[in-house]
Amino acid sequence: MKRLNYAPWLFLFPFLFLFLLFTVWPLINSMFLSMQQTYGPSRTEWVGLHNFKFLLTDPLFWKATANTVKFAAGSLFIQLPVALGLALLLNRPALKGRAYFRLIFFAPSLVGMPFVAMLFAPIFARHTGLLNKTLNYFISDWPIDFPWTQNYVMSALIIAALWMSAGFNMVYFLAALQNVSRDLIEAAEIDGAGAWHKFWHITLPEILPIAGFVTLLSVIGSFQLFELSYIMLNDSAGPDNRGLTIVMYLYQTGFEAGDLGYASSIGWVLAIMLITIALIQRRILKRHEEH
Image 1 (spheres, rainbow, N blue to C red):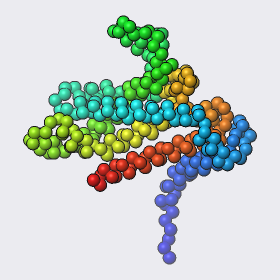
Image 2 (cartoon, rainbow, N blue to C red):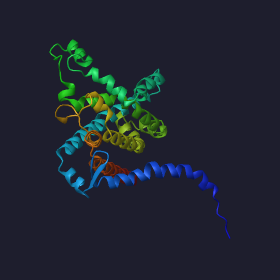
Image 3 (tube, one colour):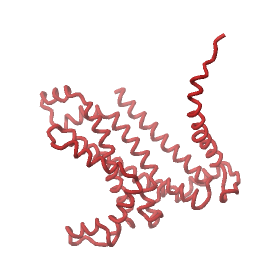
Image 4 (cartoon, rainbow, N blue to C red):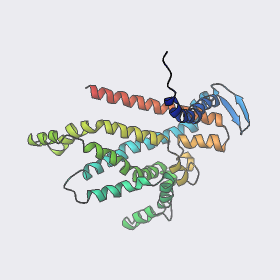
């Protein structure tokens, strides 16, 4: 009779115990909690799928979703091209001091999001902000009280996130660029291909898997936006909820209003959104690899 070897399970037990306790059990509990309505810490009422039905008609949730999508779009169409441009620039062997420039651009990603929010809040201040004073110095007609964090909340948040995350994504693109085949590039140069043709037909297809990974990270990070907007807007969602995000709305609902059941339903909808985005992106990349 074959004897069971308990040694592997003994070593796996601490991980399995912690995984079940802090991951599986909270997920199961939050699933049941999303079907309840809570009134403070001790009073709950079973409502079934009512929370999800109400969420579909909740104007604040859709406002938060629209704001989050705007921020994600800014991350994709501004932040990632900037990161790729920096990587292409710093990947040039002829550039002197490349290591120092890489450190300078990467350094902002070493600080936390709350620090970035506290740094940029006074920069975008309406009357005393550094940005308005600088623009007014160079452009005499620029109003000193331009309302960045009042009417242009998402623009301010995208700029702040750009400063922090562009260097981080640049490192991924740099790693991908250094694996691009030099033989293919040299062959293209012999055939007379210009810089744009080399990038479009050789470099971009080679770095596409990493680009897809960075895109997914950026989208997930954008949909989890909370600290940056919450701190920059003085613990609020800004005028007319212009800075309200999905995670901020989840926080307001669960911890300020006390309805943890509805907050759990928001969290599950957010998780479904992210899973759907990840599956769509995986399918697109798989189709590209097959062709």
